[in-house]
Image 1 (tube, rainbow, N blue to C red):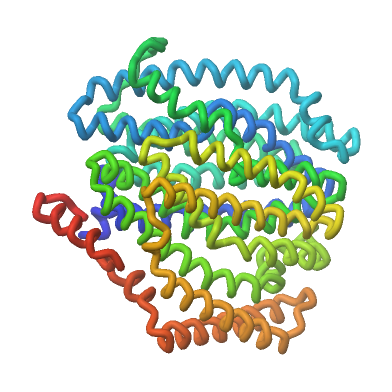
Image 2 (cartoon, helix red, strand yellow; image 1 turned 120 degrees about the vertical axis):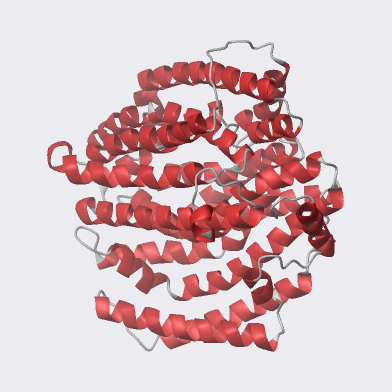
Length: 538
């Protein structure tokens, strides 16, 4: 019965259950995402047309970022959650309506302009593309651009659901999106070629991120009326919070754009980097993204209620668990890079030589898993505090400073240097956010359990080295059996080494991951007890 209630759309989740639900949904979405990437690799390989397909997402992503800037699911959640806490339902509905109306109109104009100027922008971004490759990229970009309207409106609607602690519909929107990319390819590729994937993405953006969230919002009585009332005080507050996100350029988003820009000169390099980054995104999504999305409404509530000690302890507790777990998984991913990539992607037009190159990129990307996972939580700690300006200034400065680093490392180490530059950039971005939160006395870094993080780091290093040495017993050379044998040896060695390391060091991590209410911070436990006594599910 509890499990069925957990998946009921109207079930109001705690931070714990929301994280589990989002982890489950994101894992399913990433599995479907793997099927999508595997299908693309099988059907189209790693060549000029797949490079054009991946590059075709750049302008739509850039437009969505510039116009929306993540505001749908970040700043709006904080405002809407505050209105609900203050029992101001009518103000919440008015703000919801005016934001959707005004920003959909703005984004619509942006889409039209981008459609017109796509050839000129693409020619500047991808100078290494051949004429026919650039023409295909322009065609795919124009198909994908309207999807940004569905993503944006769906994001605002999902923010309403998240504010009410209803996570089911927002969790499964991306899964539907990925499914329809695959269906588009299967149903239309024989007629439309790789364009079929773009049409599938367009349909998926409507049915997944937009329609399923709209159905969920309608089910709880959320109303919408066309409104251009830009004088609405809450709308103006939202604009003030959102402008830094719209104008700033975070390396979290810009990293993909930068990688594509530099890699456009080598045939297949954009595609191989994309495959490595997409597989690397699976643990990022499960560990970092799910926790960050689930945490924002709860961070916002604690900060809004001026429970500053619990706010700091909750953020630090989440950081500890995510970083420690990420360090352990990093060691496995680095040791298993080649057999994992080869098993996941090699089929059809994607050759073993492609696997070898992609595995190198995946190896280097894996080094930064802990930082990719942690930065999402640090960013949301700022957003929950109503401060979007500070993190975006810091992130924008780091992005600009990182550009020469990408260039130098690309010229020195070719495409692998881009993966290393990506690592260094995200490390700098995460550390900057942590230092800024510490200096503002919002989340003191000295209260992190550094000894426990050290135990996880040492365990990860030993497990990774042992796993890599054991894996060398099997020669991976394009044989499925060899891939499975190598992965099996790595998994067994890594699992045994991690278990032994955590036991020998008396790490508290297993207990905190296993027990629902476990936390290294007593004030959080006290807060949960207060919620229980008030009849609120923790």
